[in-house]
Length: 293
Ligand code: SF4
Image 1 (cartoon, rainbow, N blue to C red):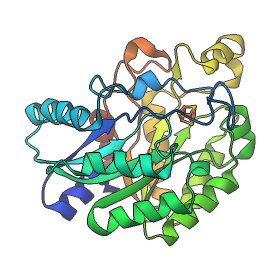
Image 2: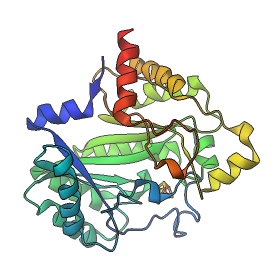
Image 3: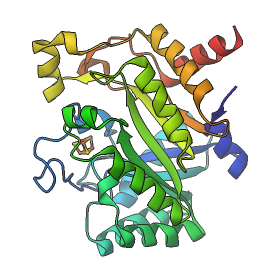
């Protein structure tokens, strides 16, 4: 059917491994003026900051709180420190090294996932991640979002697709495991344009894909655009999106690992599409049923 990330990790480590989202309190160059101001039009970081991931809380404590939360929920003993909020390579190299190793000092942490923008990795960051990867499981998660410059401009990403492509190739040269993050149903993209990104990602050294449907979140610039020009947006129902995802998987490289397909922002923050709080595992079940039908 398709390779899913949870099974891949289970095979690799012989057990369920839980990712713990962390917030090191870095900013984002697309917000502070270095690259842009105001950020990506869809971005509201509150949607991906868990209650324990407060920037003011030291990383070891965020981890402890995250582990305490998940160890009650699942019987897992090992964790991946997931630097998720904002741009997690946006600091000087000493600060990055210090922050990453603060997480790795926890004996239950077996590795790192570092999420960042494609234009925020340089040789020093890649060398640091390479060094970490010699001892720990390490994933570099790059926010590609779209393969089309017209879309990237419209959502104010502040980088081109060529920058993303080059970042993927460069990071792969350091032997890093690369996860690409893409948003589906961005304004102006047809189904064929979105499916074409499966070909593009498959031709690049991307090991893991994280897709999610566009969600219009309260308080974002996109919410304003959506209210003023709803005709620009073509948002699918959950069922239509599931049909699309099946086509996407079928068009992807056979060894591509899919980590997730949907975003689960808190319901009270979502303007559209309203999918009644469907969870990733429920959506995944839908995909499996569609594959089997
Ligand atoms: S989505 Fe990421 S890159 Fe864009 S503004 Fe938000 S934190 Fe910055």
